[in-house]
Image (cartoon, rainbow, N blue to C red; front, side, top):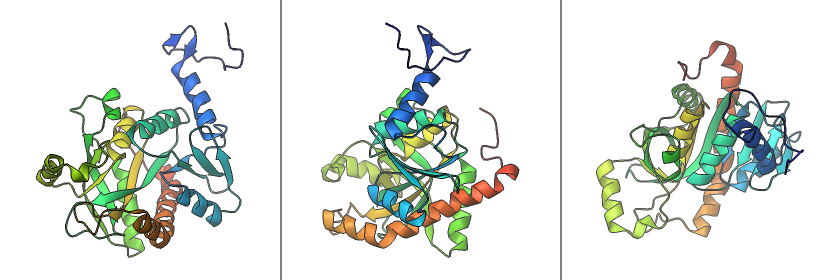
Length: 277
């Protein structure tokens, strides 16, 4: 039976009985975010936490919150920014970028939390990943495992400049992305982490970078160290997580906003990708 609510398919794409991937992608993006595609702005922040959504609304009273079936979006049309809470994990990270690719954003920046692995890191430090280790499952559906997970260089470069201008310290390095929970109690896994010399660990960066590359979405990440999981005192708890949000959410969010605003201002003279895919 024909669904007359589906928009007309485009030309030149593979289809299922005339319905293309991009048509379904845009339909799903609107359903999952609760936002019409035209409401979602060209410059997008991604987060896993509702606290960032609330802080964004406080900073920009003219913004509009939309609660979709899976994600929450706040769109600030005047400033050309949106923020989307896509919840957690590599499958939803992959889905978020895949769906956003049909909207064709100009820049996306992940504001995430990570566990610090390097002994020099402390809670509240910023980490700017230069690459990510693909210990997730979702990215394998988009690119062969041999393809490295790299952010868009110019987004990371501008993020570093914004942090420098604000006199905020940050560390760079490789982040390990895993979909394995409670890995802290797996001695074999922990020993492998130490061999890799990754600076931090998270659940989404590698997925976001690979899917962004596959779907031609310029994407970077600014991570905040929320815990130090290799030490007894550093394991995240409800109490410590709340303290991190209280102390660092506003600074983290404002740094991400400043980054995207800088990219927006420079967009006419800035080639984020350097090359064509």
